[in-house]
Length: 257
Image (cartoon, rainbow, N blue to C red):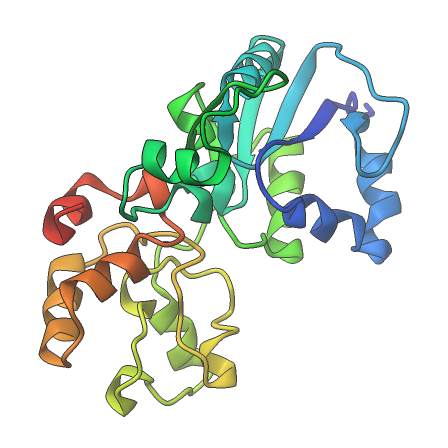
């Protein structure tokens, strides 16, 4: 018996739209993608979008104002499952990184005392801070093959298995020379794998854009970076860059964030 096609929606909030563009630019898979489900909403790829009930909603971008918070709540109410895609949606992204001065001070420096009528700005938050998220796919942007794997598994009613190892594992598999041993500031040991170690493979340090790896030994890595002469402020800025508001509480305490 033919399986009923699921109703799917893709939405973008505060971010660069890079995750949705990864899907759009996967020309060899796009027809199969649209054929495998009823794509009810995907503004970057179609114009006839609607606000009907969904089996799965994919959300890109962080929530950066009250209007977006209300919108994502509405999407959550009419969706059986909600999936956060990309590091902005999962962790808050660069726009929610831990930096000084405070968000209020930085906002006022840019906009002064001007009142914004169209939107009511708030500090950027991961989607999971506003509504329940059923599954998360990090990346900056997401990996196309990983997205279509997750998409296919969810269509079958299965829970995708995501990498539970750090970027360092992928470096080992590619036989890359460890950048830390060369004195280069890299956060691969505490960053989730899934990117295929693309930056270290080009002799560039990992910046942590896939977010924190589960069970990562942040305490040990921070101590190692200090031993190599990096300041706490530099470590805090690097490790909090992509994790943003989603950085684990344990790491916040270690960094004094």
